[in-house]
Length: 264
Image (cartoon, rainbow, N blue to C red; front, side):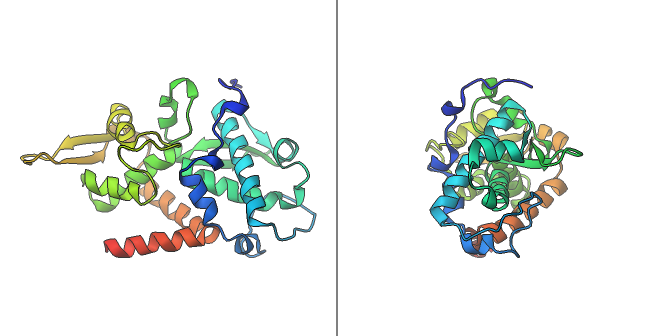
């Protein structure tokens, strides 16, 4: 396995970022998520679970997400035993809930999927959403994963037509707290990311609308996006994430529905 390029303490704690992770966790209704009907995690725990205060839940999810992101960057597997020993310690009874919500938030925000490693029991690996390799473009493996944002941008282009006016894309990003010209603690400056990094990598195309005066610009899917995934796969992923968001982050989902109604 490859080694981390930076020590663990140097990785930004995603729960402390003034970006999407904090928004997701603040929108969680802990009692609903902790109910037997809401929790369908495959991890095992024989100890009875008690209701967990929201702040304590947020702290535990944040720590576990940070740990899993380090494993993802190092391309290492982890296990339930290791997560309990290094992260959750004496909170074994809450592991199923914390693990599920951390996994879903990683998928929703960063585009990192936590998967079981067959046939090893309680062993997990982290893979990028839809097999996208955009995070390999990060210099020396540094920085937080951005595949989740790329999937969102690709889905916005799908929904609004390929090509899509750039103002539509920027509008969608602003509704999730990512603003053009403003450095984001997770994604950096979005214009640079979209129009330089992802255009240069072939995931997006960014071009002037023909005969537009003053000049207007639009986004299209790039050839690398078509090579690594498909519009059907992106649509299925977005629908799957949305369903999980409705269950785990109902307040945030209600806000997203209101925004969609405004656009309709």
